[in-house]
Length: 502
Image (cartoon, rainbow, N blue to C red; front, side, top):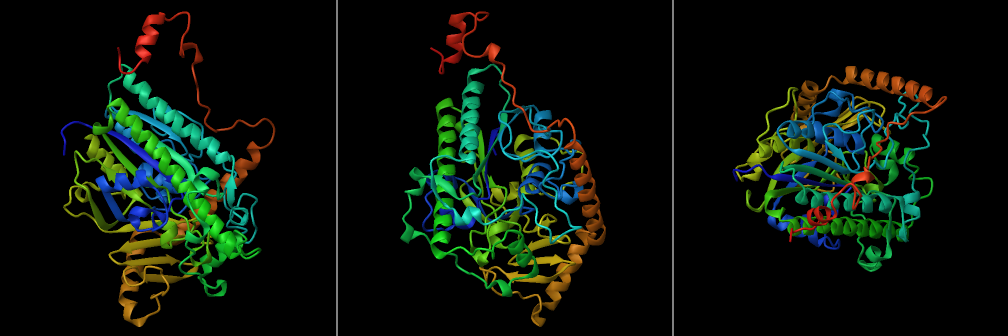
């Protein structure tokens, strides 16, 4: 490894499944900038999120811990301010830590170790989206429904485009600002986009990259009455059977999703060009990932919230040609492994709390590494904790409320056959159940989730009364010191703003 401490650029997409990316074998999707990154980097073929849902997946990514250890159960659970993150650790080690975009922090702390945050978030920071396991059949207003699929197609503008254009512009501008400034600390910058998350609408420029007849349809659609209980609850919660999409609507949703990936890819290219133009590229490690995946009609399901491959797998590429040779790592790893990896890259000390994540440095250096993932889900659609273990070729899903699931992902990549009741696999199922019992106390965890939901619903109801004080992040811009001002010598301003200096 190179001796100097590198800059780190984390480029995170939202709900981008690796099953729909060209460097994981998809024949249709166009993502040349991601492909180029993968060609020169280390691609992880078995990377997973630790929760197939936005906020808790990001808590695991930032803290290196299972979200249940810190109360991060769902999209309205607070990320406690006293939980150390990789941003805290690298900042303490002399890094400049910057966030542009979505991180779905809930609670009053909207920084979690980032010294600078360039944009607000796209989603609320309050407790309004807390699930209610006391009334599991009651549908909440904020649940997904099928409008994203039924109304999929080209658009001129969306809320997400407004957000992501701002996110990338702010990050690009910050790169130029840093190289022109006097602060010579290395940086950790996280650029986190909302695309290709639904709704499935994208401008014609990206929609027209694809032809209808080239759009592949889901590879395995299971009849609803043959689905596992959790999938059936998700179907009901998201009203997937209320108005079933036509084949044309399914194709349109996938076409828009592919177009959104191409939009994300273009933004990555924009940032890479900025790194090259500023001379920062050779000293910057780029990490490409997503928070979780997207079912996109596979098994007849949409969105995330399950442990099937399209929902739980994530793309993960680490690009640092001057440090690590290009290659692929087949072992099962997860996003919470990135915190200890960043500590290794930066030469930062360990954090003062136990973590479940393990460094990916052995994988990056081509000398193997751990092969195993633990993951969990305790949000909407569940009625009890659901946990997942991945070891080697097998994936095991367990919940006290549902029958076990066991899949051989090498022999059955579409997860058509649940082996949990096969007598030939009884020993493996028993071993997985025993391992799960060492990681989670599920009865106790169930009570913790219920108690947390009740507290948060109570607090949220109270805070809606009278004058509300939002936790949503408000970016501050000091316009008094932007561009040209009377208290600044004009020649100095123009000279310092020009790059490279004349």
